[in-house]
Each structure stands twice: as structure tokens, then as C-alpha cells.
Image 1 (tube, rainbow over the protein chains, first blue to last red):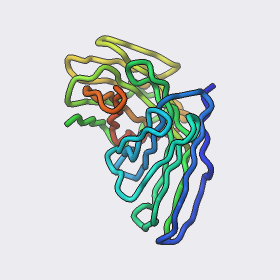
Image 2 (tube, chains in turn cyan, brown):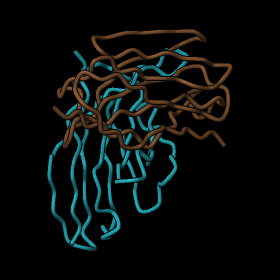
Image 3 (tube, chains in turn green, orange):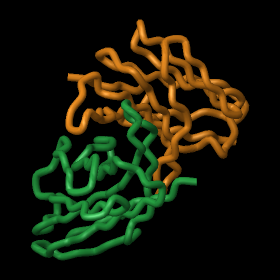
Image 4 (cartoon, rainbow over the protein chains, first blue to last red):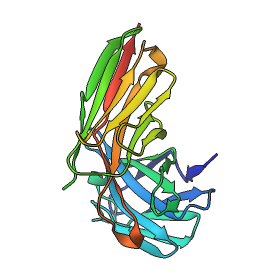
Length: 114
Length: 116
């Protein structure tokens, strides 16, 4: 079974702090994703990575950066957390076989920025 | 721009009843996905529909795809409380981008409550 893990289930941070969210997958997937999920807005793609050190902006990259130094690990960084970044953050991974395969999701990190 | 619309967004139904959730999308797409999310939990893949006329069934859930109408349906048969969850559909974008990959465009989800 595919397993995607995220470093924290719940996180509370102060405005202006630098925040790291970690995601690890154990299925040798090429593609990894960070989404945020907010009530009434569904899932919005923040960043996407299709290979080590490769990243692409999603729909809402402002205020975020990412790092993928190893194939299994994809990190989301909030450079200076703000209250409007309070959200549920979901990491996903998928294999790449020409066309996008099913995405497998981690348990999510619920971030509260005070 | 590819848009994915689900309806209804909220659905309250009685156990034992049947109902259908609809997912419309605005441009052609190769794949359509259905996911389930239990309250406070992450998303779990239910179905991947690959071609026109595709039908997949798992227990009391059946998903179908009509690519000509750009419509997928998720039919619930004889609902039980355990099916209470939020159901999302998502479609591949038609255009390739970085690394010859595509991204998913998501519907807003249908929050289903099955009551005794």
C-alpha cells in the first residue's frame, strides 16, 4: 500500500514565523503535490514537483516555497506565516506513467497561525 | 479555463434511499477521479474513470462517465450511515505542463450526511 506521511497533524504558529511542513512517500513516486483545503474553496494546488529539485507553481504559490532534495521527500515552507495561511495542508504523491496517475494523500496538517 | 462543478454541494439523505451526485466539467479531459474524505481525515481514492461509458462499482457506490456530455455521476444505492463523507470529483487538465505532466482540477466536494 502507498503510504504518504506528513510531519505534523496539528501545528500552531505565530505570525511572521517560518514554518516547515514535511511530506514523505514510500512508493518511489515521481510526482508530489502540496494542496491547501479551505471550507467552500475545495482543494487548491500550491506547488507541484515532478522530479528531484524540480518544482512548478500551482494556482496559489504566493507566500510559499518548496524543496525537494530527495525523491521521497517534499517540503512546504511558509517563509513568514500569516493568519490567512491558516488552513488544512495536504500532501499527495503519484507515479508518472505518461498521464497523471491516481494521487495518494497524506493525513493532512491543520495549521493555525495566530 | 477548465472548471469542475459538483452538485449538490450538500446532501442529507435517509438510510436505505438512493441518490446521485453529479460532476460536470467544462472542457475535454482524459481521466476523471472520485475521492472520499471522512470528517477530519484525508482523501481516499474511490474510482478512476478512463473513457466514455466507463462504469465502476464498489459496494453501494457506482461511478460512470459520459465524456460527450462532460458529466460523471456517483450513484449511491441504499445508503448507510457509513457512507457519510465528502465526495470530490477531479479531472485531468487537457494541456501538458511541466515535465509532460498534467494537474487535477477539483470540484468543491459534496458533503453527504446519511441519517437513520
